[in-house]
Length: 230
Length: 379
Image 1 (spheres, each protein chain N blue to C red):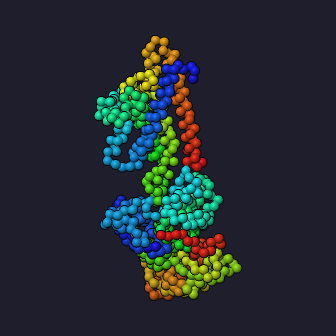
Image 2: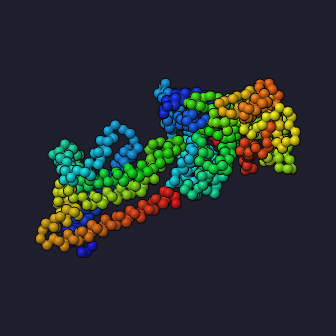
Image 3: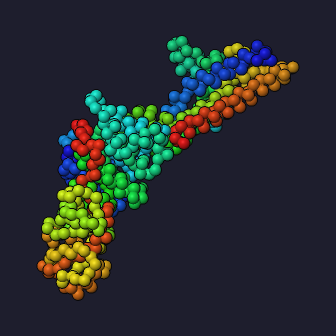
């Protein structure tokens, strides 16, 4: 990508890294949460459901500020984590955290829908054949919801790539540290003559998003065919 | 194997209150829909938690509400064949069959042999690499049976496994259950509302009505009771036991039922084979005199045992013959005209062609490939 300047390339690479880690780390929790919401009955289920979806309806800036209040180095959780050597605030890992939180509702929603589409009778049959809950999930539910997991992951990745409000509030806009693609576009638009760099980044954004969608479509079709045994 | 069940469960306006002991063999829970049969089998399987009760298999307690013990379904070691096959769509037939084996305790002996035997017994050899989506209804149900058997269960549970199949498939799958019973000596708890299925399969019938056990015993005994019609009058019919005596050239088989000849459409069994013949009450006529000049071939002399009349125009007459007790469904007008009452001598007349192949059953047609009973480890 010779036509990207080093600063622009830095933003693209950072965004890919942030979005990749955000999805990778939140995926197990996303699957667990989706399964709990789809299949289990427990007290406070509606509260959990509300909390999961909160980032979708809150202004992103509010979410970012809440993250700062929780994970800032002087905040209770952030302070504790700092003692363990983990710092989120104003680091790329913080950008990943913000992206993961913002993308979480979309991920959980997609996976939950696919879990609800799995016939519970199949899971029951697996149990009568000797499979414990965990085995039923691993051998029946999980393979059947792979397309849904893939869809959720891609959706979350796209959302994470484009996350702006919460990120800039939580970890600011430090080139090479926390300046993701959208923050970079924003920054370029603030300086005179930055339009051409901004346009190049916009093109990159579109290419990445399209590639993700096409890849997920192809993979989902392949998995669905395998799962349905067509 | 012995299964001991005691259940109390109140739900949806039905109060289930059931207690029975099932001896080895096939125990059929028989009754109309809503009689609570599926609830009983699901409680045994652990898919439903009854309000109170106790179930044990061979002395192993599956649950007991008094001691608050409860084994989850996956620890019960039961093979459940559901109404619909419930095969795993993402696995091949081979993987589906192996699914339960994977969780069964391994003792390392003859596991591969078992697989091949069951595949052979159920005729699944050509299907192994297919996906469930490409199988017919009957094939799916065969795979489901194999999958349940290969999980090395202590007991097979089957909840109306033929309900989703058409007529010829029903008969085919039923014959596979007969093989499980005869070739594998697997104990089976089977839920059905079809008298034909019960008469063919059952060692013991547990008849349920409104959540209560109304009759229990061997099918010949339970079905010879004229007051017993748990699944409607059409299901009424006695079960006779007979042996193949002779195959005639004109396509008929002659059976010997306690000294009385019974003529049936050709039965493809060797001479001497013990058979069960279900004779539907609505196919039986009653005559006071020895009938002559008549096309029906089966005439069983006997005496009226009991007459049961209900609200409708029909009546059920039980006739004790040398072949066993036969039930006839006639009109109340005929009962009055012939003056049928206990002790009256009469003849039960059954058309040969009225006895359908599904109503005749015997030991399963063991294939030549496995003449001796298969040994599947039971623990």
